[in-house]
Image (cartoon, rainbow, N blue to C red; front, side, top):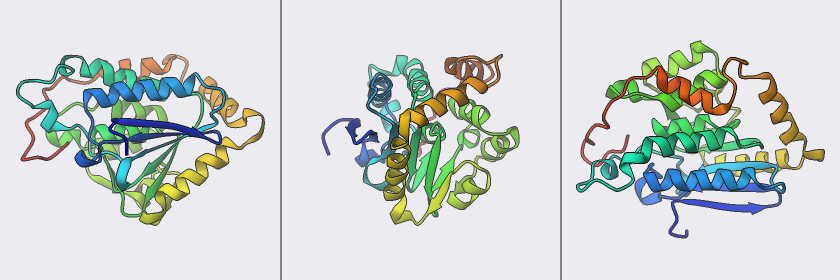
Length: 250
């Protein structure tokens, strides 16, 4: 694949947005979130896109923050603005006017889980898992909390966020987090077919339906997508990113 952190392509009404750091298990860095802002903003400005297929390169979604990069010495120049950039990337995902189909292959961990939860329709592998595990590291999880509370009942958010456990495809489907669960080797194929199906609805129906749903929810006291993330951040403590145990990404 090209040497870019995020790949964007459009064909037959479907925009494919790919996290493209396979050597680091598609882990999140400052440049990656800046590229995500650009990708989702570009999609939002186009009228020839009816759905987004959002996935990771080489059969995995995202392993979370790349703690090797976050703890590099000297510090990377993007570190001081990462929080702001990451929030902007989530807002760009929230504001995407067309349905976003996530192909959840292998894992979506911590910061990666937040991006997976931002999808409107998640297709998960039967052995793939999503983990909102920040509580186990003593870290805040504002974007995970924002997406969970924007999309799911508090009891679902509590199960994922308070336990910090791995929830596999069948559990995600049981909780209403995943739209569909399929064999691991079929995730990307099924997700791509779903995105193509949604993009093919007549009269921009999926775009219009998403706009109508957003008009009815979230509650009026929350307002814009940006407010979800600001509200979550206001109710979350601050903590330094811990040093990685070995070469593990969180």
